Image (cartoon, rainbow over all chains, first blue to last red; front, side, top):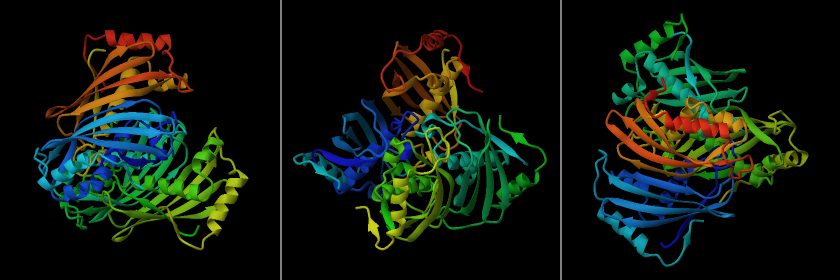
Length: 142
Length: 142
Length: 142
Length: 142
């Protein structure tokens, strides 16, 4: 899907006493981004979950460059970097009027209902891989 | 257990840009209070959950009287008001150096794994009722 | 504005171990609703804040009727019930495929930078009152 | 202070639909750990804040090794790795009955009220450095 961009509007309760978005909430924004990415790729996470598969975050990092504020109209660019049989890795760039606010990465492992590592189902794997390959035109969630 | 008091120390991320605890987090403090109340009453919620029972909040309200701040050493007084076969009601008073900061109430219904209303198991009911009756001396979590 | 409706899509981290949205998050959804209501009424909260005014929740309650789930396409209907010089009251109805999931109310008081009660600025008051009166046609955030 | 250990008990609302602590909350636990570390080192963060200094997270990462659950009695070990004039770096290890659950690091920069980078005040710097040097005996928050 090339560059995939999701709008993010920080909520009042996500801002701390410094008047900027509290650092832990960036991981929630990344999660919102993944949900939209997977829906757009044709493999909604909620559906994967109903079929007994889960994607658990096994590694996450973020670099905070500039502060984000309440009610700003931000954009989260999200890229699927790696798809293996049992794990995927996304990277993120949060952008605001002042430029790039933060960058981050997460690696997720596929688990079954008993929290054991398993391969992603073939149809989901195919959809995720197509999502990576269709890297031609930027798309945006309205 | 009479008046049961749990210490609450607001976390940095729970404070909003006004420098006071964001209103939604009071319901989380109440939940922390219930967890400690039930543990002290001899019927830990985590154990009830493992046995297939859940207590779902069906009604909640709070009145905010004075602001709470980051890292203040607060006390949450929690009282079990009503125990019926399939529901319980607690009330709360959050206290700080400036007096009573907020009061609230929650009513919870007992559900089974399929989210259907069921009666609480007899031993848990008995423990909760004993918790109400032992209303003689204040106790405090260290 | 009559009935004003805001889309809400529960995030993965807002769902608890029962697989339903954790009760405290409903107050966050109500807050998101207020932000969109005020923007639509021509008096964005972020702007009010920059001018030194705040709206602090002084009372809140909610009744949980049916559970909400991850990634469902919900609608939050929000109504401004009362506008006084220094306080406003909103009511809320969260709706999903199964009907009304929850109803709630919040009362907010206007504060200045020193957290003292003050009257809302006249232009904001006028906009909020117009928002109430224009109760003819339902509007919806895209 | 050598190894400094803070008790962490995951709250019900911090657990997701997989029955494990949602990944973003680990950064909140790390923050709770810093608050206690600084208090124990004699330089409480709330005091630093009142004097006009802030510590903003500029980099954070975590590796999730084993899941954490609701109401478990966990231990967060926290170490101050680096103190420079205008920044500090901590590392963390979250431990449960099953061993090490997660490891993480955060780097924080010191800002003044206008969110500009500044050096930490000398007394705070001295206290933090003493905190690092006193690396002889493990201490634990009761």
